[in-house]
Image (tube, rainbow, N blue to C red; front, side, top):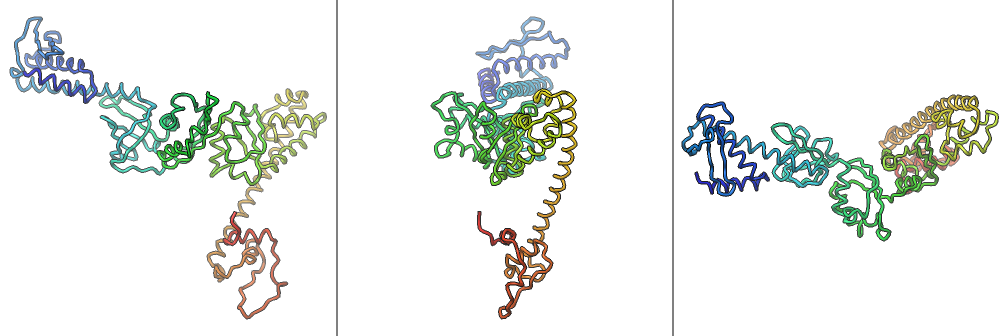
Length: 473
C-alpha cells in the first residue's frame, strides 16, 4: 500500500470538504475493521483493531491483540467492496456534520451563491460546497433569477434531514436589511449607529428607525451616505425596494411624527389605555400619510408599536363634538371633564365604549353608576354613528362609481358623441345627472347661451379633470 499517496488523498479531502483529518483517519480505521470482519466472517466487533499513523500513514492490524499481517490485496472482492462502502458512508456523514456545524454558526448572516434552478417555486442556490433552498415565501415578490445569476441572501435556518443537510435562505426576512446596513454602513457594524426598530413589507417598502451613540455622527445622514451612495447600494440589491430612514426618539409622539414622513402631521393624541395614536393631518396630507393601499401608516404602526389612526381636522372635531354632546346628557359632566378625556387620547364615543366604565370612574372622578350610564349612552351613540358612516360610505362609493362610469362612457364616445366633441360642460351635465344633454351643433348653427344647462364651477372643473382637460397639480 502506498501510504504517502493515501495521506495526500486524505489531506485533499480534508481541505476540500472542510473535514478534520483525524476524523478521516478514524473512518479509515473503521473501514479496515469492517473489511476484516467481512473477510473472516465474524460478528465480534472487538476481534479486530486497526491503527493508522497520522504522520506516516503506516497501518497496523491486530486480531485478539495479535499482529495481523495482511495487505489490501489480500482481501477478496466482497471484503474490498465492504471497505469502499464503509469509507464512502463515513465520509458523507463527516461532510454532513461539517456542513451542519458550519452553517448553523452562519444563521442570520449573508451568503452569496449562484442560482441553479426552480423546483416547485423554490429557488435552488449553490453556495460554496452545498445547495441551499429559498422557498417562495422567502423570495421578493416579482423577483426572478436565471440560471447562473448571482444571489445574495441571508441564511434563515439549517436542518438535519438525516441523509442531507437542508440550508434555507431568505431575501424577505427583515434581518436581511440589518445585515445589508452592516455591510454598507461601517458605523452600523461598529455599533456607533443602532437600528432601534424596523418594519418591512418585502419587495415594496421598509421603514427603519436609527439613533447614534456619538453626538458627532448623524445617524440618518450616515445611513444615507454622500449623495445617497450607501442607501442606493442597498436599494439596488433589493431591486428598488423603498427604504425610509427615520430618526429614533424616546418620545412616542415625535417618533410617530417621524415615522409618518413624508406626510406633515398637525397633531398627535395618544391613548395609553388603548395603545392607540390618533394623528391629525390636513386634508392635502391625508393620502400621503396613509400611503398607497395604507402602506405608509401600516409600516409606521409596526415601527412605533402604536395602533395609528389617521384623521382630518374635520373628522377629529366631529368625533369630539359627538362625544361631548353624549356625555353632557349626564349631570356633572362638564367641558373640563370632556377636555380631560381628550387629553388622555379618548376622542370619540367608540374610544369610551372600548375603555369601559372603570377608566371613566377613575379619570373623571364620578360614581360607578354615572360611569356605567355614560358607557351605555356611548354604546348606543356609537351604533348610530356606525350606521351613519356605513350609509355615507356606501353613497360615496356609489357616487364615485357613477362618475367613473359616466366619464368612461363619454371618453369612449358613447351616445354618438365623438371624444373630441365632448366639452367640459357637457361632461359635467352628464356626471351630475342632467335631464338633457345638448347635442353637438354644426358650425353654422347658433344657440343662445341662456339655453346651456347651468353647471357649478367646481363640477365643471371636476369633469374637465376626468376628460384630461384639468390643470396639472
